[in-house]
Amino acid sequence: MTLLEERPVADVEPARTFEEYVRARSVALQRFAYLVTRHPEDARDAVQDALIGLWPRYDEVAAKGDVDAYVHRSIVNASVSRWRKTRHSTPVEAPQDLPQAAASGFEDELADADAAWRLCATLSPDQRAAVVLRFWSGLAFAEIAEVLGCAEATARSHVHRALTRLRTNLLEESR
Amino acid sequence: MTDHDRADSPDRAERAFRRAFREHADDRDFAPIELTDLEGKPSADLEGKPSADLEGKPSADEPGALGARRRGTWVGVAAASVALVLAVPVIGIWFSNRDTISATAGAPAAAGGAQDSRIESFPEPAAQPSTATLSGATEAQAPAGLRWESMLDVAVLVPDAWGHDFAPGPDWCAADGYQRPDAPFVDRNPSARATMAIACPEPMPDALRQTHLTWRPAATTDVDRTQDLGDGWLAVSRRVSSALLTVEVPATDQQLADDILATAQVVEVDPRGCPVRLGDVTLGAPVAQTTATDSVVACQYADLPGDGPNLAGSVAFTGADAHAILGGLGEPVTASEPPQACTPTRDELTLRINGGEAVLRLPFDGCRPPLFDDGHARYRPSRATCAGVLTGPLWQGLYPNEELASACHP
Image (tube, rainbow over the protein chains, first blue to last red):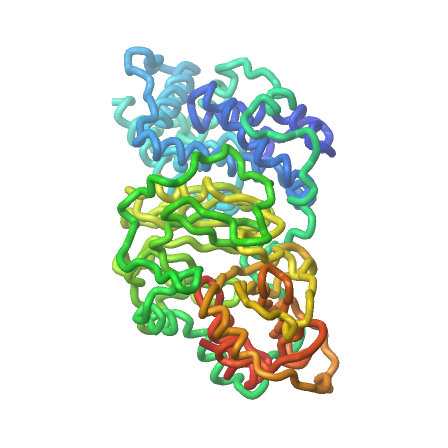
């Protein structure tokens, strides 16, 4: 399966008005925001704020062709700002609440996914956003850089470091 | 051995992330967002699309990029002016070594920085920028300790102690001798400056950073954001109508940046009475007929594409300063139109006498005579009427001929 096939793009015809866009994409956007913020309430707030910011310039942004990228950027920025203002205090799930790694076979993949999800809780918002954009949204590094407002090399670095940490964790859990 | 057996397999880690996101994206049953949900948010006005916000907005696909000048502007002083434009930071040194310039003449800015002191008098911020028009007939009153700065169709309050200087650009490393301004400052007309196509390999050293506010025309993709500049510095940006405002501060002063940006208001006429679009400037009575000069407001307009907001800044002069400007106007002159045909730019300086009773316009495009024109008579620019008013947030780097350069370049 290729990245593009996994990309959760809108499965409806392209929205033509702001209202149609909101109707078509608001749930998917909240899922994205949840993966970035890890808080359902923050996710909904972030999407609502992003949509309010989008509203006055919707026609302009839509004409450029990628409204999602614009909204993703707003969500990530809001998440990073909130993270900074709350002194980097993104709550992390208590270890005892986390699913434990399974032993083998199909359950290994579940355990790996759990390890990945736990690791995400420890990433900074922009690093987590880079990983979500890469492996959930299926964006190329140049597109990730565009959303994050950073150099492509920085986007690559965010993802590479997260992968390296996850591989290390998986190795340790395998022992 | 399968991929899954190898913990260092790239595919295994990537698959783990993908699976984690697929599973957890459905952790919550998110309800669709309705427009009514957005209407319930503070300051979300969805009753009607604010067309003014879209109307006339520069098509800034390239943020900060100005439209190509429509004719060769370098006549007579080309070499000297190129040096001036490309060496703006050097000129910045020159200015930073002089008295700090105030946006309101006659009220010199206090020396010293304010970056570590939060201004108590910042008004309570609105959740979204207001679209109310500030009083333009006379200078709108700013809260104590603050002053208005205007750019494009936005007015924003900054601490009155801030001066004006040149913010370093991305080509800072090639700007020989750039020095850190002594005090926090507002960037001087960044739309009139050229930036060398140089990508500095390293972040700007902390020793060169100073708290400041800068701006550029907003690009379609600009959103509010906070960027980590490294070494404990942040760039806090907020898109307000056609402008992207950015305050660079030490991370410990992020609240100051937020306070400043929260005061941003969308205006049609700036707090000193300057229309935000050159096309909205109207001429008044003959300046020769104005008997008592109470005030002169200099409004500078940038050569931005389209016909949207292009106000680059404004400065107010009163009392003896205003009299000195008008005293430097001299006698009317006659001049023939330049022989060459060209398309006028929107690069212009206007002087509003007594709140618009008379208005003098000085184009910087070289397509028209380099003279102030009040619609009734023309006046040759002088150091008093041109260089003397291009102070504070105003700055002109390009001149179409030597006559304008010698009269106007600071």
